[in-house]
Image 1: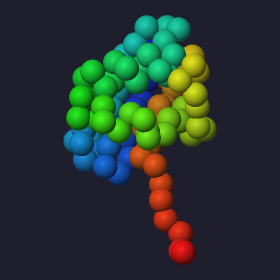
Image 2 (image 1 turned 90 degrees about the vertical axis):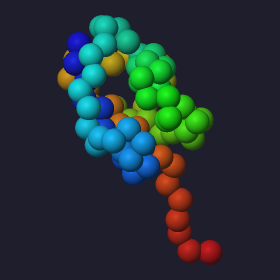
Image 3 (image 1 turned 180 degrees about the vertical axis):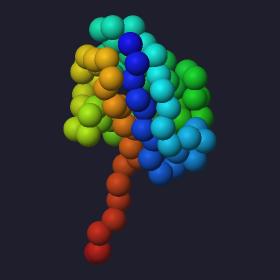
Length: 83
């Protein structure tokens, strides 16, 4: 099945693309997708623990089962605000 992967901020710079097509097997979870994605893009692996994940523009857990045509977003943590 086909997924669309969107990358933001530093992740976009590390991978060298803002959008990618990704093919995976039906029944793949978001966590399994991320494992495979980080094997292909190992420079992102150090960011895994702080990486935020979304599916179809909603934050999602690694246990989320992906479906054909889903959009997966990998987002760095956001900081900001005034002290």
